[in-house]
Length: 122
Image (cartoon, rainbow, N blue to C red; front, side, top):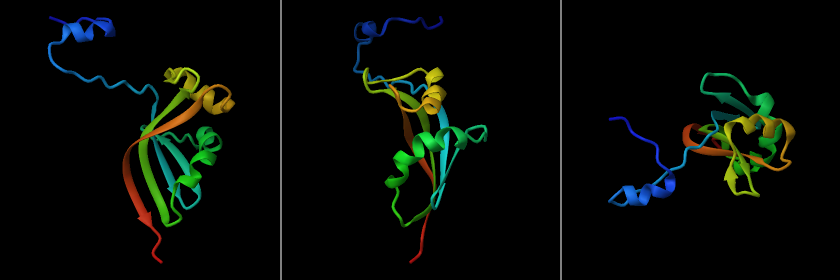
């Protein structure tokens, strides 16, 4: 028998045991490569998106890194977020938000993993 789709509100009545729901992040998987003060953004298919995210995200995150970090590679999900509705936006809004700036929504880079880090030896 195939699974059937049911309204989320019915989940507590359909399941007899305690359960947890993790929302799907509907963005684009992205790697952030930072070498000193240079930031580059790459998709899972090795397409470079620096042109899209550098001016719209880098100014807001550059102070998040310690000066002792020479290079770092972070793996995560780039998502559009709307603070008025307190919700993540559909995938289709991601590039619009990046190109237009933060008019009503802004970019959220959720980090899943630290792939590489190197510190400056002093």
